[in-house]
Amino acid sequence: MRRAYISGFTGSAGTAVVTKDKAVLWTDGRYFLQAEKQLSSSWILMRAGNLGVPTTIEWLNEVLAPGGRVGIDPRGSDVPHSPVMYAYLIVEIDGAKLFIDNSKVMPEVMNHLKNAGIELRPYDSILSEIESLAVQGTCLWLDTSSVNAAIVNTYKSACERCTTSNGHSVGHPGVYKSSPISVAKAVKNYAELEGMQNSHLRSLNYLIHLVTSLYFRDGAALAQFWAWLEDVIQKNVKLTEVEVADKLLEFRSKQAGFNDTSFGTISGCSPSFWCKWGDRTLQTRNRKLYLGGFRETLPIG
Image (tube, rainbow, N blue to C red; front, side):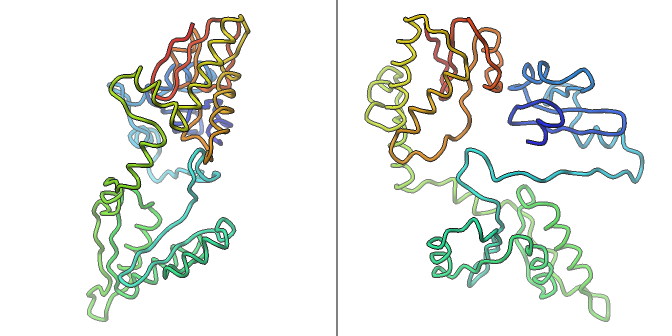
C-alpha cells in the first residue's frame, strides 16, 4: 500500500495528502489510536467525522493556490480479501461489453462470457468506447457515486463536442441516478440466503450459536481455534497477537471451499485492545490475551 509506504500508517481506511509544506492524513474513528502511534511528528492527523474537522476537499480548497493541481496515485493491486478484479462493464439493450485485463480471465470463464453474448475488450479502452457512444448520441445511465470522474467527464465532453451546424447538440446529457443494479443486488435469492446460512449460522443466543456452528465450516474453524487458544493459555504459552491471528487463519484455511478471508483478523491485547481495528503486525508480548474476532468481542482467560 502506497499510503502505508509514504506515511507509515497501515490501517485499511485513510487518505494521505502531501503538499509542498504539509503532510496530512484523514482516517475514521476506528484508527485514531493506531494513526497516533504510527504517524511521525511531521504528519498532521485529521480525525474524520469529528466536529470542525474539514474533509479532504475542503482542506485542499483552503490551502491550494488558485489554479493549483492535485496529483492522485490510483495504482494498486486487485482488492485484498475480495475475489474480484478491476473491470468496467457497459450493459446495452442487446448485449454487454466487459473491459478487463484478459490475463486475469481463465479460458473457461472467457468461453462462458462469450457464450453469454458478453464481448471482452481491453481494460484501458473504456474511455474511447465511452467517447464513441457519445458521438453516436447514445444515452448512458451513469451512477456518479461509483463511476469514476474520467468516464463522466469523457462522456460529457464528447456530448458537448458533437454539435450540429445550427449549434444544437446531437449527444445526450445522460441519466445520473443511482444504479438499479445495486438495488437488485441488495435483494438476496434463495441460493444466496442458503449460502449465508451455511457459511455461519445466525442465532439470537450466542451459546446456541457457538454449539450449532460446529456443523458449519467457519463455525468449525472457530471452535477449533477457541479450543486451541484455551489450551495454550492454560499452559502459559507466550503468544503474540500475530501468532494468534495466523493460527486462526490456519484453522479457517483447512475448511473445504476456503479461498480467502473477507478482511484481515483484528486482534488486540491490553493497550492494543482499545485500538481494535489496528494492524495485527504490531506485536505485543508478555500480556494476557484478548481476541476481537468475527465481529464479536470475546475475552479469553
